[in-house]
Structures are given as structure tokens and as C-alpha cells.
Length: 370
Picture 1 (cartoon, one colour):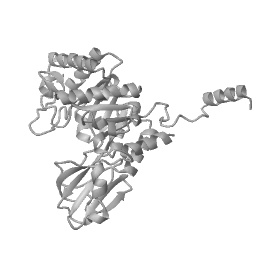
Picture 2: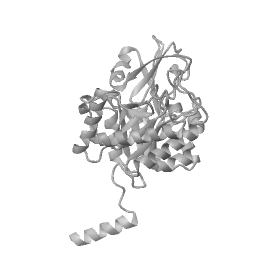
Picture 3: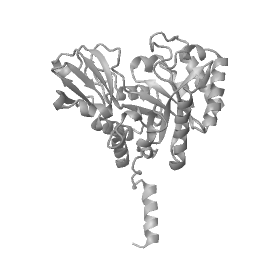
């Protein structure tokens, strides 16, 4: 075939929809975002394959006198290092995150007035510009419902969050990104956010579809399942379906993966420890637990085909572990692609192996595309 004819044929095929979307793109042609939360220092980031990310969210910044502030000199160095990576990786976006679990104690009060919201928004714009970052991610845990012990929450948090996003968008303009981390459980989804008012102003929502079984839980379960099962409603798919029911565009929805395990003690052997009474013991980084939760250490590992989630149980120590692994993050990535979601994110990068870990598996699944 002559070159001119080949080019003409490819153009016709593309217009007709014969040519498949590029690898790593969802069916609507939008490039799948891969977002890492990062709480490490300036040096540690060099150990990881940043080229496989579209976004890094520095975690965390905080509130002081209603203004966005960093944690100090080390945090400033880390943020500058992350931003410097954009020279080598021009497509990379670096966002600053406010809050986190225990890091938003004064958010309810600070954002309860128009003045407080404006002071915050202007300080956010100033900080983003000073670091040459690309936007803000709000991680207020949680508006209008109970979060960390002792943190204020009130019904008016819900409309106040909407007003906070409105003033942020006005101050930041259209080019800087705004996202927020959303609890993946029904109470948050139903009571914390005015979804139809907020989402038109945002680039995306990062659903924390992990910690669905957490440090306050009195029974085991999957802390980061893709699907619900007979004993657990909470899952990534359940959250996506809820937002679907409200008409939220899937192109703004990101689901989450966990680069750590939740471990419970005092768990009996019924159902290999799944959905049984237990006491939260600890969180363990992926790079550690893959060598700890092994048959040699007394663990047997299982796969819940309904939830698309792994778990391990040690019958001698009566210890149960719930986590994401290579198989489950691959399925989450495929889910995001197949359903036309904005992307997949995870907490957090420094918990991964330097190579051959969960990020690498996400990237492989993305490159295989659709």
C-alpha cells in the first residue's frame, strides 16, 4: 500500500471509530489519571517511578489562622523537589493537600464564615504560586459527620464545603486544579457533600475506597474491596454506583487503592477470619507485608471472588490481614478504564516497593488499555 493511501485509510478508520483508543485511555478517550499521595521527604521520591504517575499530591499542609501552611522546612523542601520533577516529566501535576486524618481539626470552624473561606482561598493561591504547583486537594475528614475524636463537625459543614469550593475556584481560576478526598462509605456519601453543586466546580473527586474497615472497627472485613459482598456493602463500586445515581460524571470520579494492610488480632478461624469479631492491631506497608504474610510465617492467603479482594489469616496467632495486592490493583485499574472513570489513586507512594510493586502493576494495566 502506498504511503499516501495508507494515511488516507487510517484517517477514514479513525473517523469511523475502527482505530482503538490509545493504550491507557478509557473508552471516552480521556487519559487515565494515576494519582499518588506522597508524605515522604525530598530524597525518598527518587526511589520511585514517577514517570508512571500523572499526579502527585503532597500530604499534608495544614490550617493556621485560617491560612494554608506547610509543616515547615522539610515539607517545603519536599514540595520543591516534587515540583522540580515536572522539568523531567512535563505532563506531571503536583497538588498540595490540606488536612488528612487528624489534620483538619479547625476546618469546621475556619470554613464556617465567608471571611474565613476567603482568607483560606487567597492563602492557597499564594502558596500554589510560590511553589509553582498545580492545585489543591481538600482532605477534610469529615464535613458534617464525625471524624477524628474531638474534631468539631456540624450540619452546616455541608453547605460550607460547597461555598469553600466556590471561593477556591474563583480565586484559583480555571487553570489550577481542585480536587477533594471523599470517604468511600455511605454516611459520608449521603451526608457530607452537596454533590450536584460541588462537582461542576471540581476537576475530580478522589474516593477513599480504603479504610472501609479501620482502626475503630470491631470486626474484620475488606478494608479496600472493589465490590460489595454479602456481609459488606462498602466498596469502590458501591461508591461509584451512588455517584452514578446522582448523575455525577464518571469522568470526574477516581477510585482508591491501599498500599498498606490493616491487621486485626484475636480473630477466630470461622470463614478464615473474614467478617469475624476482632481488634485492630496495626497498619503494615505493602513493601513489608508481602514478605511477612507468608506460609512460612503461618499465614494462609485467600481471594474473595465476589469482592475482588485478598486477605490472609494466621490460625496460630489468630491474626487477620486485609489489603490490596497485584491482582486487586490490576482489577481496580481495569474497572476505572472500562467504566470511563477519571482514574485511580492510592495512599501512599512511600509504602510501595521501589520496583515491581503496586504502582508498576497499575501502570502495566493502564498501558494494556482498552
